[in-house]
Image (cartoon, rainbow, N blue to C red):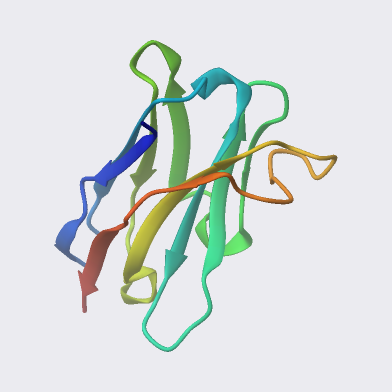
Length: 123
């Protein structure tokens, strides 16, 4: 059974930090690129950061220098360290897995999705 479980969300003040975890099981973790998405109320879901063993890491401009994605393959877990948080980072954060297809570490399609974890940044 494939499982993809996010954790680490919560309420934090502007400028604070959170570390999200995405623990995977039931599939060969190393073969996939892992992407952190987020979706704020009334907004479209957006990919925030990705990581793969073959294509490295990438970030959207709005989080560069503040967020860091990393992976512990022995634990089948991907982390998203979020520093200097802003109210506009408030969203439900999801992780997803897919195969890369020439767009760096951003997959074209996704095979597995987590349920999400809420991040709220107060001003």
